[in-house]
Every structure is written in structure tokens, then in C-alpha cells.
Length: 131
Image 1 (cartoon, helix red, strand yellow):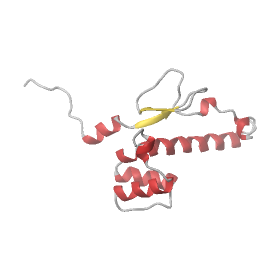
Image 2 (cartoon, helix red, strand yellow):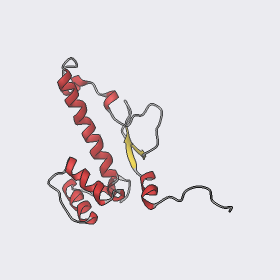
Image 3 (cartoon, helix red, strand yellow):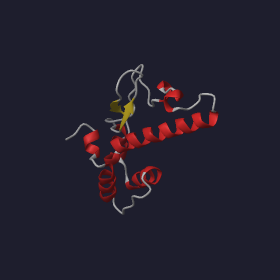
Image 4 (spheres, one colour):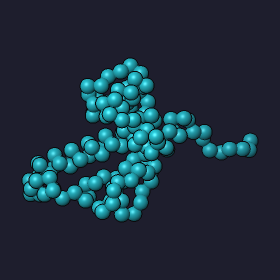
């Protein structure tokens, strides 16, 4: 038995490899890269570059600092999710909308994506560099 020794990839595994995310730098605008990509000097979150005082949060106030960090990570999760709407299955889309857009409900993937895009006032494909 010769031939291919590796495991065949399912469509879902292939789609996960093509997912995108934002990377953040201290002095440059965020960029979009493949989910598994990393670049020296860039982070998966802007948190390492955030100054709490820019948000009128005293760095000594642990509770407010924690809330600020959670809020920023919520925005990061939302932005990365918007980049990947088309790659999510219906379960992932429902989880995404329950976390970020709880007013949106639909029975199909296509309807969920249409409602998300309508609420955003744009198309997720625009964020992916498409037309």
C-alpha cells in the first residue's frame, strides 16, 4: 500500500485554516492575516499597547483595569468574528450572535449572515478585502 500517508482534510478543517484575524502593532494600523500567522512585533490583541489612562482608567484600580481589558477583548473577538462569518457553521454563528448581537436570530446560516451584515451596515466581504 503506497500512496498518501497523511489524513485527508475535511472541508471544515480546510476552512479553519483559511480563517483570518487582525494583528495589532504599537505604532501601525491593524492588519488582517491568516489565523495561524504571527509577525514579530505584532500582537493578537491591542492590549499590550493600551494605556489605561487613555481611557480615563486609573492603572491602580484593578476592577476598572479588568473591565477595560475584557471590553477590549470583546471588541477583538467581534472584529475577528466579522472577518470569518462565511467560514462559520450555523452553531458557531449562533454562538457569535449570542455573545455580540443577541437581538439577531435566524434559522439558516445565510439569513444569520444577512442580518449581521445589515446590522453592521456593510458586508463582511468588504472587511476581507473584497468589493
